[in-house]
Image (cartoon, rainbow, N blue to C red; front, side, top):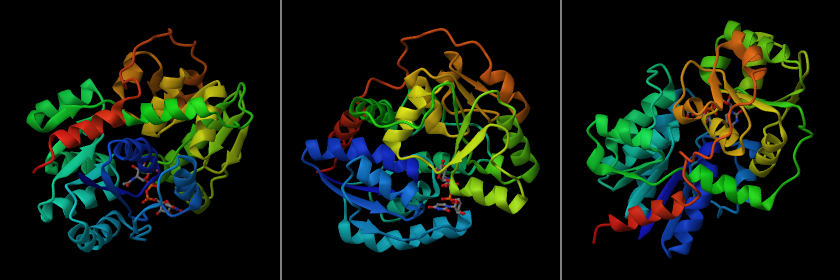
Length: 346
Ligand code: UD1
Protein backbone atom coordinates (compact mmCIF):
# COMPACT_ATOMS: atom_id res chain seq x y z
CA UNK A 1 0.00 0.00 0.00
CA UNK A 2 1.31 3.44 -0.93
CA UNK A 3 -0.07 6.40 1.03
CA UNK A 4 0.63 10.03 0.19
CA UNK A 5 0.07 12.40 3.12
CA UNK A 6 -0.45 16.09 2.46
CA UNK A 7 0.29 18.41 5.39
CA UNK A 8 1.02 22.11 5.67
CA UNK A 9 0.09 23.62 9.03
CA UNK A 10 1.25 23.05 12.58
CA UNK A 11 -1.59 20.82 13.85
CA UNK A 12 -1.19 18.59 10.81
CA UNK A 13 2.44 17.85 11.63
CA UNK A 14 1.35 16.71 15.10
CA UNK A 15 -1.28 14.38 13.59
CA UNK A 16 1.15 13.11 10.95
CA UNK A 17 3.68 11.89 13.54
CA UNK A 18 1.78 8.83 14.87
CA UNK A 19 0.38 8.04 11.42
CA UNK A 20 3.89 8.02 9.90
CA UNK A 21 5.01 5.62 12.64
CA UNK A 22 2.03 3.33 12.16
CA UNK A 23 2.48 3.27 8.38
CA UNK A 24 6.15 2.39 8.81
CA UNK A 25 5.26 -0.36 11.31
CA UNK A 26 2.80 -1.82 8.80
CA UNK A 27 5.45 -1.80 6.04
CA UNK A 28 3.49 0.68 3.91
CA UNK A 29 5.17 3.07 1.49
CA UNK A 30 4.60 6.65 2.68
CA UNK A 31 5.19 9.81 0.70
CA UNK A 32 5.01 13.08 2.69
CA UNK A 33 4.12 16.29 0.88
CA UNK A 34 4.52 19.60 2.78
CA UNK A 35 2.54 22.39 1.13
CA UNK A 36 4.50 25.17 2.85
CA UNK A 37 1.36 26.82 4.30
CA UNK A 38 3.35 27.17 7.53
CA UNK A 39 6.98 28.05 6.88
CA UNK A 40 8.22 29.62 10.13
CA UNK A 41 10.67 27.14 11.70
CA UNK A 42 8.73 27.44 14.99
CA UNK A 43 5.50 26.39 13.27
CA UNK A 44 7.03 23.73 11.06
CA UNK A 45 10.60 22.37 11.25
CA UNK A 46 10.68 21.88 15.03
CA UNK A 47 7.68 19.57 14.75
CA UNK A 48 9.42 17.31 12.27
CA UNK A 49 12.57 17.26 14.40
CA UNK A 50 10.93 16.74 17.81
CA UNK A 51 8.30 14.25 16.73
CA UNK A 52 10.70 12.17 14.65
CA UNK A 53 8.74 12.66 11.42
CA UNK A 54 10.68 11.77 8.27
CA UNK A 55 11.60 14.87 6.24
CA UNK A 56 9.01 15.68 3.56
CA UNK A 57 9.63 13.98 0.21
CA UNK A 58 8.16 16.99 -1.58
CA UNK A 59 7.93 20.62 -0.44
CA UNK A 60 5.59 22.85 -2.43
CA UNK A 61 6.75 26.10 -0.77
CA UNK A 62 3.40 27.81 -1.21
CA UNK A 63 3.49 30.17 1.81
CA UNK A 64 0.85 32.65 2.96
CA UNK A 65 -1.86 34.37 0.95
CA UNK A 66 -5.59 35.02 0.86
CA UNK A 67 -7.67 31.85 1.23
CA UNK A 68 -8.32 31.59 -2.50
CA UNK A 69 -4.74 32.27 -3.54
CA UNK A 70 -3.28 29.88 -0.98
CA UNK A 71 -5.76 27.08 -1.69
CA UNK A 72 -5.46 27.54 -5.45
CA UNK A 73 -1.66 27.53 -5.39
CA UNK A 74 -1.58 24.25 -3.46
CA UNK A 75 -4.18 22.69 -5.78
CA UNK A 76 -2.23 23.66 -8.89
CA UNK A 77 1.10 22.50 -7.49
CA UNK A 78 -0.24 19.10 -6.45
CA UNK A 79 -1.35 17.91 -9.89
CA UNK A 80 2.10 16.83 -11.05
CA UNK A 81 3.07 15.42 -7.66
CA UNK A 82 -0.02 13.23 -7.38
CA UNK A 83 0.25 12.09 -10.99
CA UNK A 84 3.95 11.18 -10.62
CA UNK A 85 3.55 9.36 -7.31
CA UNK A 86 0.22 7.65 -8.11
CA UNK A 87 -0.58 6.55 -4.53
CA UNK A 88 -3.25 4.07 -3.41
CA UNK A 89 -4.48 6.76 -1.02
CA UNK A 90 -4.15 10.50 -0.69
CA UNK A 91 -4.46 11.12 3.04
CA UNK A 92 -5.46 14.60 4.27
CA UNK A 93 -5.65 15.86 7.83
CA UNK A 94 -7.96 18.24 9.68
CA UNK A 95 -9.46 21.37 8.20
CA UNK A 96 -6.91 23.79 6.81
CA UNK A 97 -6.59 25.24 3.35
CA UNK A 98 -3.96 22.56 2.66
CA UNK A 99 -6.58 19.90 3.48
CA UNK A 100 -9.16 21.23 1.06
CA UNK A 101 -6.69 21.88 -1.74
CA UNK A 102 -5.31 18.33 -1.55
CA UNK A 103 -8.82 16.87 -1.40
CA UNK A 104 -9.84 18.66 -4.59
CA UNK A 105 -6.56 17.75 -6.31
CA UNK A 106 -7.06 14.04 -5.47
CA UNK A 107 -10.67 13.73 -6.58
CA UNK A 108 -9.98 15.57 -9.84
CA UNK A 109 -7.36 12.90 -10.61
CA UNK A 110 -9.65 10.04 -9.46
CA UNK A 111 -7.24 9.09 -6.71
CA UNK A 112 -8.80 7.53 -3.57
CA UNK A 113 -9.03 10.16 -0.85
CA UNK A 114 -9.06 9.55 2.91
CA UNK A 115 -9.80 12.30 5.43
CA UNK A 116 -8.39 11.97 8.93
CA UNK A 117 -10.35 13.86 11.60
CA UNK A 118 -13.53 13.65 9.56
CA UNK A 119 -16.98 14.64 10.82
CA UNK A 120 -16.08 17.58 13.05
CA UNK A 121 -18.56 20.41 12.85
CA UNK A 122 -18.81 23.82 14.51
CA UNK A 123 -21.95 24.68 12.48
CA UNK A 124 -20.42 28.14 12.14
CA UNK A 125 -20.49 28.83 8.43
CA UNK A 126 -18.28 31.93 8.82
CA UNK A 127 -15.22 29.84 9.79
CA UNK A 128 -12.81 28.94 6.99
CA UNK A 129 -12.17 25.62 8.76
CA UNK A 130 -15.88 24.73 8.60
CA UNK A 131 -15.92 25.18 4.80
CA UNK A 132 -12.74 23.15 4.50
CA UNK A 133 -13.97 20.22 6.58
CA UNK A 134 -17.47 19.97 5.12
CA UNK A 135 -16.18 20.11 1.53
CA UNK A 136 -13.38 17.64 2.26
CA UNK A 137 -15.70 15.14 3.96
CA UNK A 138 -18.10 15.15 1.04
CA UNK A 139 -15.25 14.66 -1.45
CA UNK A 140 -13.55 11.81 0.41
CA UNK A 141 -13.88 8.06 -0.18
CA UNK A 142 -12.93 7.15 3.38
CA UNK A 143 -13.83 9.24 6.42
CA UNK A 144 -11.71 8.51 9.48
CA UNK A 145 -13.64 9.94 12.42
CA UNK A 146 -12.12 10.71 15.82
CA UNK A 147 -15.27 10.52 17.98
CA UNK A 148 -18.82 9.17 18.21
CA UNK A 149 -20.08 12.75 17.87
CA UNK A 150 -18.20 13.10 14.56
CA UNK A 151 -19.66 9.77 13.37
CA UNK A 152 -23.17 11.07 14.16
CA UNK A 153 -22.56 14.20 12.06
CA UNK A 154 -21.38 12.09 9.13
CA UNK A 155 -24.43 9.81 9.39
CA UNK A 156 -26.73 12.83 9.36
CA UNK A 157 -25.04 14.05 6.17
CA UNK A 158 -25.57 10.70 4.45
CA UNK A 159 -21.91 9.66 4.68
CA UNK A 160 -22.23 6.66 7.04
CA UNK A 161 -21.12 4.01 4.56
CA UNK A 162 -17.81 5.78 3.95
CA UNK A 163 -17.13 6.47 7.66
CA UNK A 164 -15.04 4.56 10.22
CA UNK A 165 -14.50 5.47 13.86
CA UNK A 166 -10.75 5.21 14.49
CA UNK A 167 -10.28 7.50 17.51
CA UNK A 168 -8.16 10.60 17.77
CA UNK A 169 -4.52 10.43 16.71
CA UNK A 170 -3.81 13.48 18.90
CA UNK A 171 -4.32 11.20 21.90
CA UNK A 172 -1.67 8.84 20.50
CA UNK A 173 0.90 11.59 20.10
CA UNK A 174 0.10 13.24 23.43
CA UNK A 175 0.51 10.00 25.40
CA UNK A 176 3.74 9.18 23.62
CA UNK A 177 5.12 12.69 24.21
CA UNK A 178 4.19 12.68 27.89
CA UNK A 179 6.13 9.47 28.40
CA UNK A 180 9.25 11.04 26.96
CA UNK A 181 8.97 14.27 29.03
CA UNK A 182 10.37 17.72 28.28
CA UNK A 183 11.40 20.87 30.16
CA UNK A 184 8.31 23.09 30.70
CA UNK A 185 8.26 26.88 30.88
CA UNK A 186 7.91 27.89 34.55
CA UNK A 187 4.13 27.37 34.67
CA UNK A 188 3.08 26.57 38.20
CA UNK A 189 -0.02 28.63 39.01
CA UNK A 190 0.09 30.13 35.53
CA UNK A 191 -2.41 30.27 32.71
CA UNK A 192 -1.27 29.09 29.28
CA UNK A 193 -2.96 31.12 26.53
CA UNK A 194 -3.06 30.86 22.73
CA UNK A 195 -5.17 33.01 20.41
CA UNK A 196 -4.82 32.75 16.64
CA UNK A 197 -8.23 32.30 14.98
CA UNK A 198 -9.35 34.89 12.46
CA UNK A 199 -12.55 35.53 14.42
CA UNK A 200 -10.46 36.69 17.42
CA UNK A 201 -7.47 38.30 15.70
CA UNK A 202 -8.81 40.06 12.63
CA UNK A 203 -11.29 42.51 14.20
CA UNK A 204 -9.24 45.06 16.22
CA UNK A 205 -12.07 45.68 18.73
CA UNK A 206 -12.49 41.97 19.37
CA UNK A 207 -8.72 41.44 19.63
CA UNK A 208 -8.39 44.35 22.10
CA UNK A 209 -11.17 42.84 24.23
CA UNK A 210 -9.55 39.38 24.24
CA UNK A 211 -6.17 40.82 25.25
CA UNK A 212 -7.87 42.92 27.96
CA UNK A 213 -9.59 39.75 29.21
CA UNK A 214 -6.23 37.99 29.51
CA UNK A 215 -4.58 41.05 31.10
CA UNK A 216 -7.26 41.12 33.82
CA UNK A 217 -6.36 37.62 35.08
CA UNK A 218 -4.96 37.34 38.56
CA UNK A 219 -2.12 34.98 37.54
CA UNK A 220 0.85 34.97 35.19
CA UNK A 221 -0.39 34.43 31.63
CA UNK A 222 2.02 32.65 29.30
CA UNK A 223 0.80 33.90 25.92
CA UNK A 224 2.27 31.66 23.21
CA UNK A 225 1.95 34.02 20.30
CA UNK A 226 1.24 32.66 16.79
CA UNK A 227 2.75 34.98 14.13
CA UNK A 228 -0.75 35.94 13.01
CA UNK A 229 -1.56 37.24 16.52
CA UNK A 230 1.62 39.32 16.68
CA UNK A 231 1.04 40.71 13.20
CA UNK A 232 -2.61 41.65 13.77
CA UNK A 233 -1.89 43.18 17.20
CA UNK A 234 0.93 45.27 15.76
CA UNK A 235 -1.24 46.45 12.86
CA UNK A 236 -4.04 47.44 15.27
CA UNK A 237 -1.66 49.13 17.72
CA UNK A 238 -2.56 46.69 20.52
CA UNK A 239 0.11 45.95 23.12
CA UNK A 240 0.16 42.21 23.96
CA UNK A 241 2.32 42.47 27.11
CA UNK A 242 -0.36 43.97 29.37
CA UNK A 243 -1.16 43.11 33.00
CA UNK A 244 0.54 39.83 33.87
CA UNK A 245 0.81 38.64 30.26
CA UNK A 246 4.25 37.31 29.26
CA UNK A 247 4.56 36.99 25.51
CA UNK A 248 6.45 33.90 24.29
CA UNK A 249 7.09 32.39 20.89
CA UNK A 250 5.04 29.30 20.04
CA UNK A 251 6.46 26.24 21.82
CA UNK A 252 7.71 23.01 20.34
CA UNK A 253 5.17 20.25 20.93
CA UNK A 254 6.94 18.36 23.77
CA UNK A 255 7.51 21.61 25.62
CA UNK A 256 3.92 22.70 25.07
CA UNK A 257 2.63 19.45 26.55
CA UNK A 258 4.94 19.71 29.57
CA UNK A 259 3.99 23.36 30.11
CA UNK A 260 0.23 22.76 29.92
CA UNK A 261 0.57 19.78 32.26
CA UNK A 262 2.25 22.06 34.82
CA UNK A 263 -0.18 24.99 34.43
CA UNK A 264 -3.26 25.93 36.41
CA UNK A 265 -5.50 26.61 33.42
CA UNK A 266 -5.62 27.07 29.65
CA UNK A 267 -7.30 29.89 27.71
CA UNK A 268 -7.38 29.26 23.96
CA UNK A 269 -9.19 29.31 20.65
CA UNK A 270 -7.25 26.32 19.32
CA UNK A 271 -9.03 23.02 18.72
CA UNK A 272 -6.08 20.83 19.60
CA UNK A 273 -5.30 22.61 22.84
CA UNK A 274 -8.86 22.13 24.14
CA UNK A 275 -8.33 18.38 23.88
CA UNK A 276 -4.77 18.43 25.17
CA UNK A 277 -5.97 20.32 28.25
CA UNK A 278 -8.73 17.76 28.75
CA UNK A 279 -6.39 14.79 28.35
CA UNK A 280 -4.01 16.39 30.87
CA UNK A 281 -6.99 17.32 33.11
CA UNK A 282 -6.20 21.03 33.09
CA UNK A 283 -9.36 23.21 33.06
CA UNK A 284 -9.81 24.97 29.73
CA UNK A 285 -11.57 28.20 28.77
CA UNK A 286 -12.29 28.56 25.05
CA UNK A 287 -12.76 32.04 23.60
CA UNK A 288 -15.25 31.04 20.91
CA UNK A 289 -19.03 30.80 20.63
CA UNK A 290 -18.89 27.08 19.76
CA UNK A 291 -16.53 24.11 19.71
CA UNK A 292 -16.09 20.99 17.62
CA UNK A 293 -14.91 19.14 20.73
CA UNK A 294 -18.23 19.17 22.59
CA UNK A 295 -17.21 16.26 24.83
CA UNK A 296 -14.79 18.54 26.70
CA UNK A 297 -17.69 20.90 27.51
CA UNK A 298 -20.19 18.15 28.36
CA UNK A 299 -17.70 16.63 30.80
CA UNK A 300 -17.20 20.02 32.48
CA UNK A 301 -13.53 20.54 31.56
CA UNK A 302 -14.07 23.30 28.99
CA UNK A 303 -16.29 26.38 28.93
CA UNK A 304 -17.05 28.63 25.96
CA UNK A 305 -16.91 32.37 26.62
CA UNK A 306 -16.64 35.75 24.96
CA UNK A 307 -13.79 38.10 25.92
CA UNK A 308 -15.78 39.43 28.89
CA UNK A 309 -16.23 35.96 30.35
CA UNK A 310 -12.56 34.94 30.51
CA UNK A 311 -11.88 36.04 34.10
CA UNK A 312 -14.91 34.30 35.65
CA UNK A 313 -14.32 31.13 33.66
CA UNK A 314 -10.67 30.87 34.71
CA UNK A 315 -11.66 31.43 38.36
CA UNK A 316 -14.28 28.63 38.35
CA UNK A 317 -13.79 25.68 40.69
CA UNK A 318 -11.93 22.66 39.36
CA UNK A 319 -14.30 20.37 37.46
CA UNK A 320 -15.31 16.97 38.70
CA UNK A 321 -12.72 14.28 37.94
CA UNK A 322 -13.62 11.85 35.15
CA UNK A 323 -12.15 8.76 33.54
CA UNK A 324 -14.12 9.22 30.32
CA UNK A 325 -12.03 8.69 27.16
CA UNK A 326 -14.01 10.22 24.27
CA UNK A 327 -10.78 10.69 22.29
CA UNK A 328 -9.65 7.10 22.44
CA UNK A 329 -6.81 5.47 24.28
CA UNK A 330 -3.84 5.98 21.97
CA UNK A 331 -4.37 3.41 19.18
CA UNK A 332 -6.02 5.66 16.58
CA UNK A 333 -3.04 5.71 14.19
CA UNK A 334 -2.89 1.90 14.08
CA UNK A 335 -6.64 1.77 13.44
CA UNK A 336 -6.27 4.41 10.72
CA UNK A 337 -3.72 2.28 8.89
CA UNK A 338 -5.90 -0.83 9.27
CA UNK A 339 -8.88 1.05 7.81
CA UNK A 340 -6.77 2.17 4.84
CA UNK A 341 -5.41 -1.36 4.28
CA UNK A 342 -8.87 -2.92 4.45
CA UNK A 343 -10.11 -0.62 1.69
CA UNK A 344 -7.11 -0.55 -0.63
CA UNK A 345 -8.12 -1.57 -4.13
CA UNK A 346 -6.39 -4.49 -5.87
C1 UD1 B 1 -4.11 27.75 9.89
C2 UD1 B 1 -5.44 27.03 9.74
C3 UD1 B 1 -6.08 26.87 11.11
C4 UD1 B 1 -5.13 26.21 12.10
C5 UD1 B 1 -3.84 27.01 12.13
C6 UD1 B 1 -2.84 26.40 13.07
C7 UD1 B 1 -6.57 27.56 7.63
C8 UD1 B 1 -7.75 28.23 7.01
N1 UD1 B 1 -6.38 27.79 8.93
O1 UD1 B 1 -4.39 29.07 10.38
O2 UD1 B 1 -7.23 26.07 10.98
O3 UD1 B 1 -5.73 26.20 13.37
O4 UD1 B 1 -3.29 27.03 10.80
O5 UD1 B 1 -1.78 27.27 13.34
O6 UD1 B 1 -5.89 26.83 6.96
N2 UD1 B 1 2.16 33.18 9.17
C9 UD1 B 1 3.49 33.35 9.43
N3 UD1 B 1 4.31 32.26 9.35
C10 UD1 B 1 3.86 31.03 9.00
C11 UD1 B 1 2.50 30.87 8.73
C12 UD1 B 1 1.64 31.95 8.82
O7 UD1 B 1 3.94 34.43 9.74
O8 UD1 B 1 4.67 30.08 8.96
C13 UD1 B 1 1.24 34.34 9.29
C14 UD1 B 1 1.04 35.09 7.99
O9 UD1 B 1 0.83 36.43 8.28
C15 UD1 B 1 -0.25 34.48 7.47
C16 UD1 B 1 -1.02 34.27 8.76
O10 UD1 B 1 -0.02 33.89 9.72
O11 UD1 B 1 -0.93 35.28 6.57
C17 UD1 B 1 -2.08 33.20 8.67
O12 UD1 B 1 -1.48 31.97 8.28
P1 UD1 B 1 -2.35 30.84 7.56
O13 UD1 B 1 -1.53 29.64 7.29
O14 UD1 B 1 -3.09 31.42 6.41
O15 UD1 B 1 -3.44 30.46 8.64
P2 UD1 B 1 -3.32 30.24 10.23
O16 UD1 B 1 -3.89 31.43 10.89
O17 UD1 B 1 -1.97 29.78 10.65
